[in-house]
Image 1 (cartoon, one colour):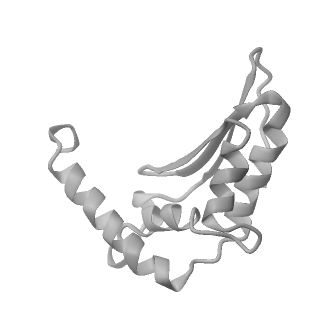
Image 2 (spheres, rainbow, N blue to C red; image 1 turned 180 degrees about the vertical axis):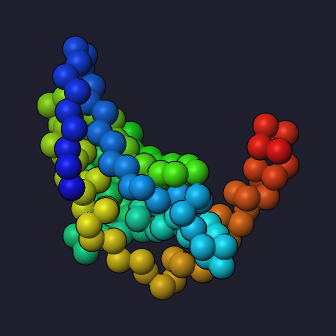
Length: 126
């Protein structure tokens, strides 16, 4: 994993890990798998439960999220500069050590299907 740092004045560090995976690279048989994996990485790691993932960012006032696009999937965290290493630790753990709990797989499938319906109903996504 390569880290790119862009020095900038301010009080917040924005950390972003991008994977070159998205809808463009998916086999039609497995359409949506990148988005599904994006969601599942928030469901726990070998080191953290889903609640601990959120708490390890939120207890320092940070934000954590992700998105899947046509060519990339990105995971990001924003946190006060003095806690930037904490945010990177959480992101790296999510990427390197996901556990994909069986009980969450079925639930998350339904969440994504609902999201797809929501986007289908939005004129901006037509």
